Length: 120
View 1 (cartoon, rainbow, N blue to C red):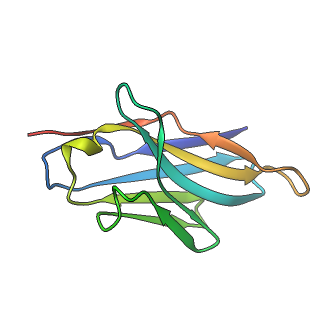
View 2 (view 1 turned 90 degrees about the vertical axis):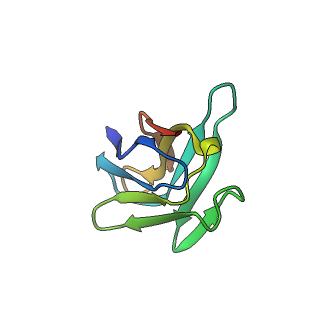
Protein backbone atom coordinates (compact mmCIF):
# COMPACT_ATOMS: atom_id res chain seq x y z
CA UNK A 1 0.00 0.00 0.00
CA UNK A 2 1.16 3.49 -0.86
CA UNK A 3 -0.13 6.64 0.77
CA UNK A 4 0.36 10.28 -0.13
CA UNK A 5 -0.43 12.69 2.68
CA UNK A 6 -0.63 16.42 2.03
CA UNK A 7 -0.40 19.28 4.49
CA UNK A 8 -0.12 23.05 4.50
CA UNK A 9 -3.32 24.29 2.92
CA UNK A 10 -5.43 27.06 4.37
CA UNK A 11 -6.78 30.57 3.97
CA UNK A 12 -4.47 33.38 2.86
CA UNK A 13 -4.93 36.92 1.64
CA UNK A 14 -4.08 37.89 -1.94
CA UNK A 15 -0.35 38.43 -2.27
CA UNK A 16 0.38 36.03 0.57
CA UNK A 17 2.27 32.76 0.64
CA UNK A 18 1.63 29.15 1.54
CA UNK A 19 3.78 26.06 1.49
CA UNK A 20 2.29 22.66 0.68
CA UNK A 21 4.01 19.43 1.58
CA UNK A 22 3.36 15.85 0.55
CA UNK A 23 4.91 12.72 1.98
CA UNK A 24 4.78 9.36 0.25
CA UNK A 25 4.90 6.28 2.45
CA UNK A 26 4.39 2.56 2.22
CA UNK A 27 5.83 0.01 -0.16
CA UNK A 28 7.94 2.16 -2.48
CA UNK A 29 10.81 0.94 -4.63
CA UNK A 30 11.40 4.10 -6.66
CA UNK A 31 9.61 7.33 -7.47
CA UNK A 32 9.71 8.43 -11.07
CA UNK A 33 8.00 11.78 -10.63
CA UNK A 34 6.08 13.81 -8.09
CA UNK A 35 3.90 16.80 -8.61
CA UNK A 36 0.89 18.89 -7.75
CA UNK A 37 -2.48 19.29 -9.45
CA UNK A 38 -5.40 21.48 -8.49
CA UNK A 39 -9.12 21.55 -9.05
CA UNK A 40 -11.27 24.63 -8.62
CA UNK A 41 -15.07 24.38 -8.27
CA UNK A 42 -16.69 23.65 -11.59
CA UNK A 43 -13.36 23.16 -13.35
CA UNK A 44 -11.27 20.21 -14.43
CA UNK A 45 -8.23 19.12 -12.48
CA UNK A 46 -5.13 20.77 -13.91
CA UNK A 47 -1.40 20.31 -13.56
CA UNK A 48 0.33 22.90 -11.40
CA UNK A 49 3.90 21.62 -11.31
CA UNK A 50 5.89 18.40 -11.37
CA UNK A 51 9.47 17.31 -10.90
CA UNK A 52 11.23 14.29 -12.37
CA UNK A 53 14.92 13.42 -12.64
CA UNK A 54 15.78 17.03 -11.87
CA UNK A 55 13.49 18.42 -14.56
CA UNK A 56 10.85 20.87 -13.44
CA UNK A 57 7.66 21.80 -15.21
CA UNK A 58 5.15 24.52 -14.28
CA UNK A 59 1.78 25.63 -15.55
CA UNK A 60 2.06 29.02 -17.24
CA UNK A 61 -0.33 30.49 -14.68
CA UNK A 62 2.06 29.81 -11.78
CA UNK A 63 5.48 30.36 -13.36
CA UNK A 64 7.54 32.82 -11.36
CA UNK A 65 5.27 32.50 -8.32
CA UNK A 66 5.36 28.81 -7.36
CA UNK A 67 8.40 26.64 -6.72
CA UNK A 68 8.37 22.86 -6.53
CA UNK A 69 11.06 20.93 -4.70
CA UNK A 70 11.64 17.33 -3.75
CA UNK A 71 13.52 15.50 -1.03
CA UNK A 72 14.37 12.10 -2.49
CA UNK A 73 15.63 10.72 0.81
CA UNK A 74 12.33 11.49 2.53
CA UNK A 75 10.02 10.82 -0.44
CA UNK A 76 8.50 14.25 -0.07
CA UNK A 77 7.55 17.00 -2.47
CA UNK A 78 6.87 20.60 -1.56
CA UNK A 79 5.17 23.49 -3.31
CA UNK A 80 6.09 27.00 -2.23
CA UNK A 81 3.36 29.34 -3.39
CA UNK A 82 4.05 33.08 -3.37
CA UNK A 83 2.11 36.09 -4.62
CA UNK A 84 -1.10 34.09 -4.37
CA UNK A 85 -4.14 35.25 -6.30
CA UNK A 86 -7.84 34.54 -5.80
CA UNK A 87 -7.75 32.42 -8.95
CA UNK A 88 -5.32 30.07 -7.20
CA UNK A 89 -8.16 28.98 -4.93
CA UNK A 90 -8.65 25.24 -5.38
CA UNK A 91 -8.15 21.85 -3.83
CA UNK A 92 -4.53 20.90 -4.38
CA UNK A 93 -3.65 17.24 -4.92
CA UNK A 94 -0.29 15.58 -4.59
CA UNK A 95 0.57 13.09 -7.33
CA UNK A 96 3.30 10.49 -7.61
CA UNK A 97 4.34 8.07 -10.33
CA UNK A 98 6.17 5.25 -8.64
CA UNK A 99 7.00 1.57 -8.60
CA UNK A 100 6.46 -0.52 -5.49
CA UNK A 101 9.00 -3.25 -6.34
CA UNK A 102 11.83 -3.87 -8.75
CA UNK A 103 10.55 -4.75 -12.22
CA UNK A 104 6.98 -3.60 -11.64
CA UNK A 105 5.30 -1.06 -13.90
CA UNK A 106 4.95 2.43 -12.45
CA UNK A 107 1.53 3.43 -11.14
CA UNK A 108 0.00 6.78 -10.35
CA UNK A 109 -1.08 7.63 -6.82
CA UNK A 110 -3.01 10.59 -5.46
CA UNK A 111 -3.28 12.31 -2.13
CA UNK A 112 -6.60 13.20 -0.54
CA UNK A 113 -6.29 16.89 -1.39
CA UNK A 114 -5.82 20.04 0.64
CA UNK A 115 -7.87 23.21 0.31
CA UNK A 116 -6.17 26.48 -0.59
CA UNK A 117 -8.34 29.58 -0.40
CA UNK A 118 -7.04 33.00 -1.43
CA UNK A 119 -9.40 35.71 -0.28
CA UNK A 120 -9.45 39.04 1.50
